Figure 1 (tube, rainbow, N blue to C red):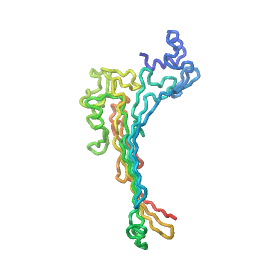
Figure 2: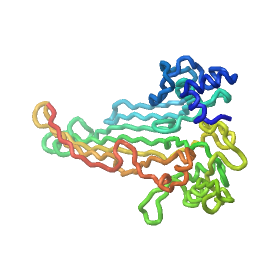
Figure 3: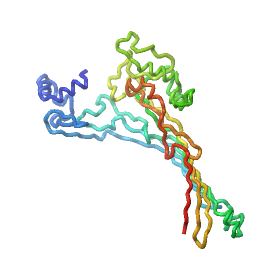
Figure 4: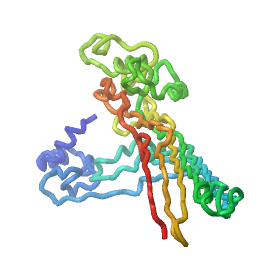
Length: 343
């Protein structure tokens, strides 16, 4: 098998291309359209011929979902709206662009569908709730409807809430081999963990991290194939190994490993609360004072790490297993005072 470096070297040299043709190779052996060679990707020159790029319609996606919505129109001072969505989204393995035929995964394998991971990606469960409640005190309410000073004190109170709870985003760990555990077992342990010092947040148990780093610390000169002690117990291992080599490693077709190891990150939760008081001043004018608590329960929503199976440098670096980024409209509780004069 000719390496990608060697094939690119032939394409970049007109003499080499002609020698290949003279040797009996067809002109389109390395590229689909050899008569319009030019620039690809990052404007890397290919010979002196005019350049072109083209795309195919091989990409695709599909989405299946169940959506339920409930509404309560304003009655008795309460109005509310809630909805729930259950869904799955998939994208095909060949959705990348074809640029002079070099970006396509391979013509030797069929396409396949993958769960759409990343941000926003595929969210399996999502629940949202919004409600507003006018407390039954004051003028035109059930309690304290005599107006006057008492109405200005007890009337005009309103409570509002907005909350969202959804399953975590899908994380593609890459084309990995699972050792000592199943995919279901990995799903259970793929969760946030705070270290003993309470200073760092990790995505996997410490033993899995340690042994995964050992599995990715490979060495071509070591008798064992590893730079240190061989991994033991449960861990994630590179797709390639002594017993199997991924021929189409760039395409991640999974001859040796999982093809695409997708797991669900931690649940996302956030609730905003609002308490307000309107006081009539004169006629149709009123003064409103409100306290808003954004992310009222101070929920920390971390962005889970992934991509350990991308390459060795990622898999054997302990920093890539640490969770450091928060997500959400408000990553911590914020309290703000709002005043408004309405007329």
